[in-house]
Length: 320
Length: 125
Image (cartoon, rainbow over all chains, first blue to last red):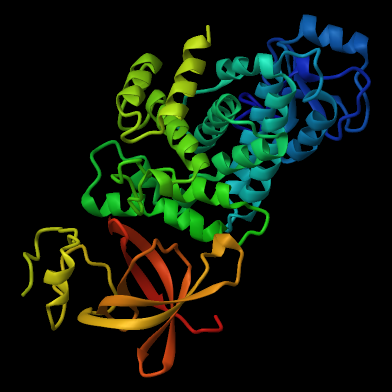
C-alpha cells in the first residue's frame, strides 16, 4: 500500500461516480487521504458503500477510489452488473470506466504467451462496447470525447472499435449481436503485431525494407492465429486479414480489389487509418482530425470505401 | 545469375511467361530469409483445393494449378482464385501421389491470377 503513484504500483483508479450505493463489489477499495503519500484501505471486498459514504467520498476525496490491478476482473463484473446499463450515468463516464479497467486487463493478457486471453477479453469487451452504443444511440457520439490518443496498442484498438461501431450504426442495420462481433473484430485487428518486434513498431526512423516486410506480415499472422477459433465469424477474420487492403488493389497482404474486400474490413480500414493518423506515434506527431478527414476524402473510392469515409467524417464533424 | 548481394532487393513478381521459361536455381538476395534454395519448376498439376479455413466447410474442389518454383520446404504456385493463409491443397506433383501443402501467403497479380507461397505439410498434421 506504499503508493506514491498508484498506477505504477499496481492500483487502478476508479471514478467514485461509477460506484453505486449499496452495491457489493468483490474487491478491496482504497483511498488516498489529502496530502498522504500512500493509499489506505477504505472498504473490504464484499461490503457495500452507503449513499452517505459515497456523498462524502465525492465531496472530500479526489473523486477516485483505487482497486488492485489483480482484482480488475472483479471490478469488470461489477461494472457489467451495476454500471454499464445505469442510465443515470452519462454514456461517456460509463465508457471511460470500462476502458480504464479493460486497459489493465489487456495489459495483463498481452503478457501471456498465447493470444487466448486477449481473444477472450476482446469478445467480452466487444460485447460491452456494442451494448453501450446500442442502448444510448443518441449519446453514442459522446464516446468520441473520452477516447485517448496515445500510441499504446490497447488505446488504438479500443478507438478503432468505437469508430467502427459509430460508422456501422450509420451505414448498415446491424443488430446488437453483429455490432458486438464487429467491435470484437476491431479489437483483434492488430493481433498479428504481437509477432512484430517492439523495436520495429516503435522505431522513430524510416523502416528498412526488411522491417517493412515484418510489419506487412501482421494481417496474415493475425488471421492465421485466429482462423481456427470457432467463436469468430468470417467478417471478424476478414477485419484482421484485410484491414490494410485498398479498393484499387494497392494494399496488402494480397492486393485484392473492392469486391473481394469484406464490408467489415472496409469499415475497419477507415477507422484504423483515422486513429493511426490522429494519434501521436514514436515517429511522428498527431495529425489534426480535420486534415485526416481531408486525407480520407481524397482517397475515398480509390483506397477507402466512400460510404465508410463519409460516415466517419460526418461523425467527427458532428462532435462538438 | 546472382543479383547484387549488397542490395536488399524484394524479388519482383515478373510476367508469367518470362518467369516460367527459366530453369535452374532462383537468384538469392541479401534479405532472403529462406531456409532452402529454390528452383524454377514449371508444371501444370492437378490439385484438390480445400475450402479456406474461415469458411468452416469441408468442401474440396478439383482444379489445375501452375507451379512456379520449388524448394525442400515449399512450393510457389499460380491459381485463378485467391487462396488464404493455412488453406490446404493436395497436389499431384509426381504421378498420382498427393503432396499436401498449406498456403503461407497469397498475392494478386492481375484479374483471376494469384500467386501463393505454400509450405509442405504432412496430410494428417
